[in-house]
Amino acid sequence: MTVDVKTNSRLEKVLKSGQLAVTSECGPPRSSAPEGIIKKGELIKNHVDVINVTDNQTSVTRLCSLAACVHLKLQGLDPVLQMVVRDRNRIALQSDILGAASFGISNILCLSGDHQSFGDNPQAQNVFDIDSMQLVQTVRRMRDEGKFLSGDEIKVPPNMFVGAAANPFADPFKIRVPRLAKKVAAGAEFIQTQCIYNVDKFELWMEQVRDRGLHEKVFILAGITPMRSVGMAKYLRKSVPGMDVPEALINRMAGVEKEKQAAEGITIAVETIQRLKEVKGVAGFHIMAIEWEEKVPEIVERAGLFPRPVID
Amino acid sequence: MIVGEQKPLEEIWEMVKRHKQLTVFGCNTCVAVCHQGGNKEAGILASLLRMKAVQEEVDIDIVDSGIERQCEHEFFDSVRDLMSRSEAVLSLACGIGVQFVATKYETMPVYPALNTTFLGDVIAVGHFTEKCQACGDCVLGLTGGVCPVSRCCKRLSNGPCGGSSNGKCEISKEIDCAWQLIVDRLEALGRLDDYEKIPPLKDWSKDRAGGPRSFKLEGI
Image 1 (cartoon, rainbow over the protein chains, first blue to last red):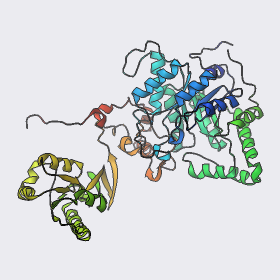
Image 2 (image 1 turned 90 degrees about the vertical axis):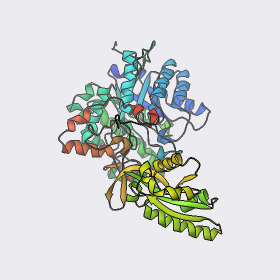
Image 3 (image 1 turned 30 degrees about the vertical axis):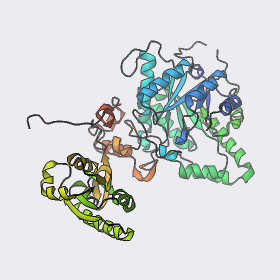
Image 4 (image 1 turned 120 degrees about the horizontal axis):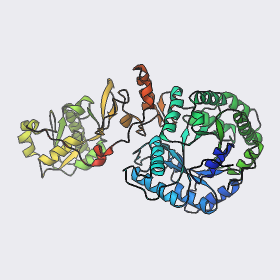
């Protein structure tokens, strides 16, 4: 099949071929040893199209996303460079984009980043020179116009497939689709959503997305995070802002004996994917199995998303 | 106005205890409104320091005084004699006043009694909240009169982020989500369509980032 692809991204090719994409994520280690991230990549590489590498998630200092992406790239995998605007000004952002592109990294996910108060250095200054939407604009300008923000020419522009995040569950709900529209207008080509537990609300959001025709302008990957226990479900519901875990789901987890809760969490994830496969405009799934990467293959297989398409 | 909060007494004491004479010097404008640095507070702080000196058996002559504003030359006329007799000044002004004193009296040690905290308003008696960061490039016309630079914890030009929950910020239930307020205001003004306009990248050269700022009125 020939499709009009702009980059070397496997993700772009899968999505533009009309097949459901599967992405996942790996968090780099809090150490200078690369083996951890390489091992996580190995665990999931046959079951996903690309692998996101988180950028100092929850503001806890880790091995940098760019270096971790390079390690995965050297293993022959296709990483998605997650980049937050919390820690870098526009000079550093553009510089890191060029650096990533120089290693053949073909995907970027533009994020604001969790506030540093959640992390290991709450005393840190934050940067927020530009925001995530403007980072999307920046990468598109660098790629498509071959220009830096200053207007100076980039002799060899970075060639990256550009993504952004969306959280249908944050407030105010009425601007959640308009905010997506802004990201699309800024140049986002794919979207990875926040973890979906309230499927009804997600479907309502998707309905509004379709009403505006946004599903035809951007590929939306539905975020899936399996819950390991009822404790995790309660924690997500109570303590993570912008996370919507319905009471019914907590009761379902609580209704299962402790040793079987992890398996129940996997089953819920699989069922969620199966239900969302039927939702028009869902272009794939982003499976975030936090420090539980070994379960990704099972979820992908049980959800009927295996084998992954072969891309040249 | 400028809001400040008094430093802990211990910290102040450590700065000033080596002097034989100290003038505790209030500033009766902004920091008086928040009851931290006015001439009345200077009097109270001086008393506390005198008690501390007695407790610590340190011999130090502490005088309290104050003027209307420590950031303008003309207000210092009334304290010319006092200043000439002072060995050191503990200023209860904001950081601006402290520096003004330091510049005006080249050889006199001056210490800050306050931490200058923010530019804010008085939303209720005794309740002060930050509203401006003096970024030098005001966007309030675009954001319905709610400042995302000072009131969004990530100073997003295009918020709210995914952490906005029930009108509150992800970092604290005590902090309103600025972008929830912006959306509410735009809706109340019938301008919700403006929400989808993406503003140009902010020019931070007009902010602190561009170096110390100043401006000069011509013809005065």
